[in-house]
Image: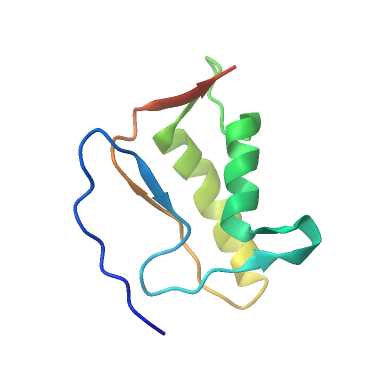
Length: 94
């Protein structure tokens, strides 16, 4: 396995990664997506919205992390999504 080193993320970017640089990602074959992608799309579709109807970067991360970790553990993997950037950035509003 190759360890990926992270660089500095410019201030105007928000970057989500499916796992840390030392982890291998998992797949939800029955959903047709990787574990991270499946829950990322669900979060952006409204599952991660707050009381005002906004999905912020940190709100999405707070939704993603336990969902991805639980799904990966069911496959005997460790996988933790990582957020780089400003957590208060609004991504979507409903």
